Image (cartoon, rainbow, N blue to C red; front, top):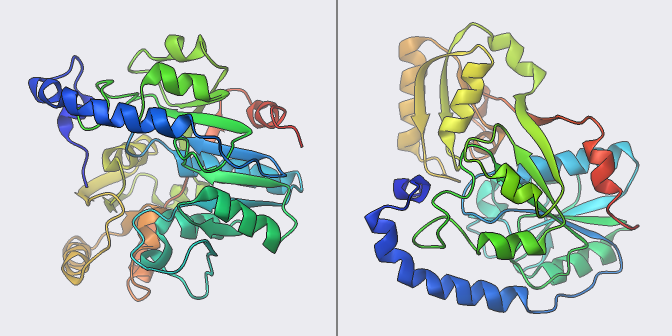
Length: 326
């Protein structure tokens, strides 16, 4: 599903205003959810979430937290719901990279599982109990789930994209918000703000919680394509964000193809990409999320280009982890 264009238009459009009365339902649901007491795990729970629908960089942040844990020798596990997975495996269950594919567990879960044990389940408390029982972890990292009431979070981190912000600042379906902004800011302890503040939200957020700023940068592997023409494709929340990052890193985009978020590639899609590759005689580049959704036989034709965070303050991760009481 591609987010409606009017979600990003501020002031809100007539369409958004017409849908606003239905947002009352969203407000009631989130109010009920955040007031439910979640299960307190015997170890700390860190949640990387957002207030909106769509790609803000939650998984990138969760992976960044995981890499820091590895550097500090902190045993941990990821918890995720396995968004867009099509399997009906009984929850909770742990991702097995030797058995599961993107259709089984979702693309994000596969990326997380490459780094650490990753548990799938809508009930995060059940996933947490399973993870703790399975291995001696000292920290649980939730990828998304800020509004999930089943598990108490010791440290909730709000992830904000500086370009899209909170869109038109209306609740679903009139806008992209899952819960009201002020209500959401009261439930988190800190914010990771990614990119330039193009919506002017930074002063509002920083008046409520500490803010750590970062930029998205490409993995050094991108250098092999510097000043080269490529064909880029992506099926993520904001494909244009990926394409712009490629341009910022001196890649020449001869062709870009966008697919819906978490899109499962069909034979028709793959034939189209293959035809473009053969016609232009140019390399195909994509995101890691898209790469794991490609069939095994197609993967040699595409190169996944990973993004990572570059912090304004190099001590950001250390300061964030000081908020956790182990």
